[in-house]
Structures are given as structure tokens and as C-alpha cells.
Amino acid sequence: MTLHPWRVHDGDDDYTWKWLAWAPDSETARTICLGDTEAPSIDDMTAEREHSLESQDGEPFIEGDYSILRDLGFMCESDSSCDTCGLYEMDGEFPVCDECGQCPDCGHSDYCETGKEEVSE
Image 1: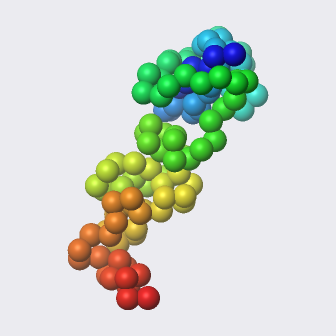
Image 2: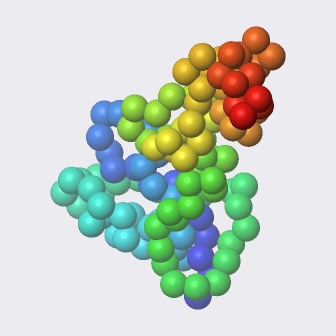
């Protein structure tokens, strides 16, 4: 079965994408995410195709790889974002430095004492 990536939202007031579902169509994407939400039905949910990723074969699933989700701009609740690239921490998988506000991918800023301490260790 050919699966396409879908950004799925559960219809609450905080309009941020909740899941990236791999499914053949919008209805299937919303259905597999329904068990993960308090939305009363799939009719309350929205799904939009994510065109930056290639389709793949397999069985429908919800993406759990934080590096993929992060690159697409997803976030976890209460995540901080990097001051340089704007990407989120993803529940601490990519921690933003409290001092310089940068993530591991961007590296510490030149003035960051925390970064200097890590280099000297």
C-alpha cells in the first residue's frame, strides 16, 4: 500500500499540528490518530498532505521519529525553540542551551560559558 505523509490536527483551539501520519488518504490518517486524541470523531479533525516527504510503501502508522518531526517544525508541549534555527527541543531530545538559546545542531554561541565548559571537559 502506498502511504503519503499527512499533518493531522485534532480540532482544538491551539492550532498546531499534532501528528504526522503515514496513510493512503486523509480519512485513514485521521482515523489512526483518533485513538490518540479527545476529538469525538474524525469529522472534527483535519489532515493536510505534507509534500516535502516522499511517499513510501507499508502499513499506515503515526511517525514517531523526533528528528523527522522536528525538521518539519513540529513541537512537544512546553518546548523551547533554538534562537538560531527556530526548531524545537522535542521533549529534550535536542536541548536548547539555557544560556545561549541554541540547539545541538547549531552549537553554542561564542560567548556561551556552558559551551566553553563542554569543550574543556
